[in-house]
Length: 297
Image (cartoon, rainbow, N blue to C red; front, side):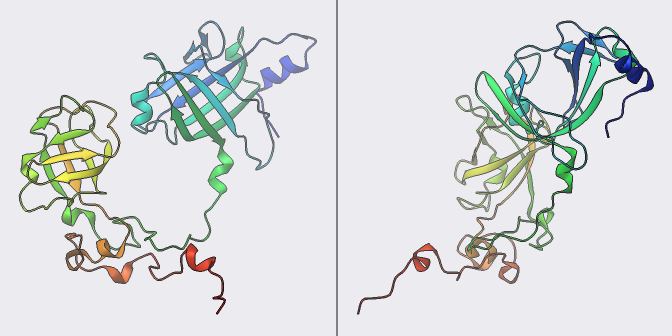
């Protein structure tokens, strides 16, 4: 059952036939940043905070449901410097962001709300000019993954409990000695990493910046060249990488036995042979075996 305040219930049951509805949105990103928006054309104060009008944002139709039924909504809007920015989305700050939605009477917003719902952002996509987010209600937390997908590639994440390896034991720290002018968010050079690490050593690995514009953000390594100390990322970082930025980095796992064998494998990873914890089934029959038909002979 939906609950409203006593004063709001009195308003709903009064002889008034006109209600001036406005929706208030409170958005909290994963870094703690809070946005307060409203679909009304003027600033609305609920007695505690101001909610700023936001233009160009549309939400799909939804209804308030009781019980454990999901309240899923799709929201679309425009990229803008005063609202949702591409840098925030690329940094992953909107993933799992918490959104609280309240419906109030915009003339008397401080007396309570007609209903309140809470959502979590599950997926965000964007272009140069617009963004789209899929959000789900709190009942999504009751959904539990049961079972695993079996395949030839390892299903564990490097450093997880199932994997058994400790990332700290082969993590390196360095700083940017040359920032790329052509690709300031996707390439850098760190001469301090070049000693002893062959080409490809950091591929599939992760880099976490500990200072600079991207402080606290993580990227994935696509290519490492020992002779030049150059790192190329699989995707651009949200912000420009600058000279002197510090970071931690560790080599990655390609999810194949050659990587899991560590120093004994052809990929030359720094950990000891960990094939006993390999989470894949490299002898499992492939699709060709599944669709093979009997020999006519």
